[in-house]
Image (tube, rainbow, N blue to C red; front, side, top):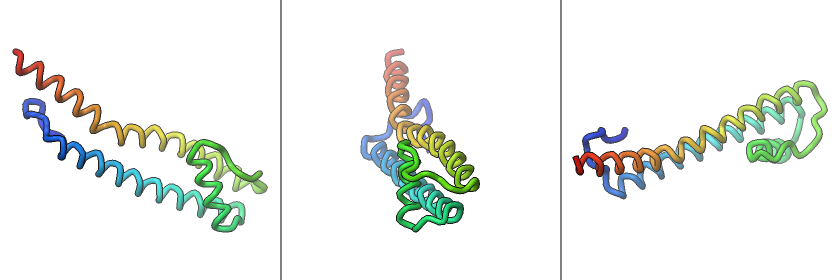
Length: 116
């Protein structure tokens, strides 16, 4: 997926394609996560689709649930979904920043190798 250490850095357009590809992958993962969250709230709390989506999106954004949960199943689901959302945020940041950090390190190493 990435160029070898001894190869020159790819052109900027190739780098931009990597960032866009990772962003597209991230959008798909967010959509799937929101869908799973909405289904979970709908099944455990009996919420409407709009309310379930609203609660799931608030949990994923880190703001917390919008309404008080009534069932034990809903509380357990919300706890697990909140933990998942927190870890998802860290993974999403890594997915978006991975091409940037790789390019920075590759360019610095390639310049150092040219000096030697």
